[in-house]
Length: 220
Image 1 (tube, rainbow, N blue to C red):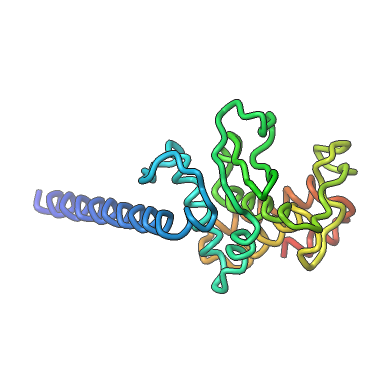
Image 2 (image 1 turned 180 degrees about the vertical axis):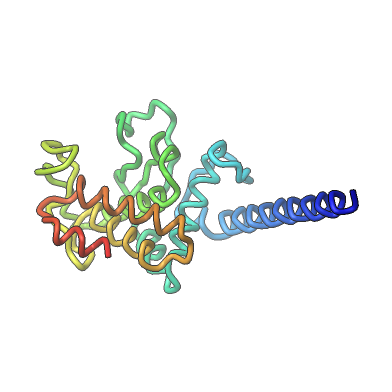
C-alpha cells in the first residue's frame, strides 16, 4: 500500500511538472509572438493571445512555425532571410480566392504571404519549411517553378529546375536546404526524422534532374 501511494504521488508530481512546463513554454511563445514575431512578419492575427492546443488555434501554429525558423540555427539565418522577404502575413479564410485546393501557402503582391487551410494540416517541420519556401518568392530574381519532369506531379508547373548548393534556386531549393539543415543538426530525433522524410519527398517529387546518387548525397 505504501509503495502504491508513493508511486501515485510521484506520478502526480511528474504530471503537474509537465503541465507547468507546457504552460511556461506556451507563455514564452505568446510573449515572443506579441513582442517580436507579430510585428516583424506583420501577421494579421485572429486573436491576441492564443492557446497552444494544436491544431485548434491557427495563430498558435503560425507563431510556432516562425519560432521554429528562429530557433533552427544559432545565427538565425533562416529566420532573418524570411523576415526580410515576408512583408505581411495573412491567415486566409476557408474559401479565399488566393488559395486553390492544394495550395498551402502563396506569396502575392507586395510580398504578402497568404496561409491557406492545407498549411495548418501538415507536420510541424513542413510548416516552418513552407514559410522559408514562400519567402524565396519574394526576391526580385526568383526563378520560379517549372514543369515537373518526374515524380507524382509530372507535367504540373510546381517543380524547381534543379538543386544547387546555394540559394539560387526557387522555393523547393530553399525548402530542401532548410530540411537538410534540420536533418543534419537538430538535437531532436523526431525533428530530424520528419526533416529527412520531407527532404526525401522534395528530392523525389519537387526538384527536376536529380539522379539517385545526387539524392543519396543529400540524404546523408
